[in-house]
Length: 118
Image (tube, rainbow, N blue to C red; front, side, top):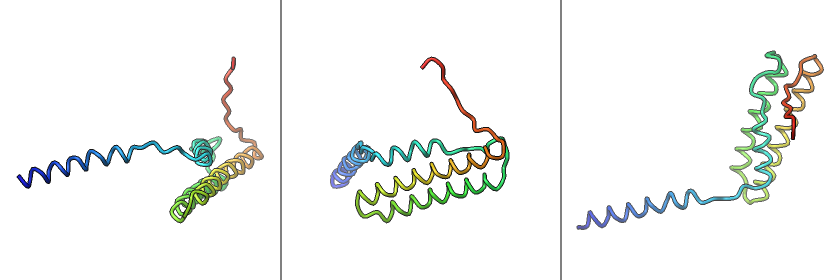
């Protein structure tokens, strides 16, 4: 009898946890902007050329990701979180621009997609 009650209490507790864990939390504006920049991270070198600019770009992106994790861990309020996400997004944008500018200067083209009729 006692064992059945314990089992039922555990089952109820487990049923409650996923419901609260899946609660929808709206993302901050800064986080959404940073996620867009994150999706724009260049995955392969422009022109297939792995040079110092490519390796610097990848190293800087990895450093930005580590810094974001550290900043979010240390954040004490929502403003600190906003600052961390904003800094992360701007760093990704800056690094992508620096890398593409260096490669264009050397004669490599940045791929673009144009959609007609919109």
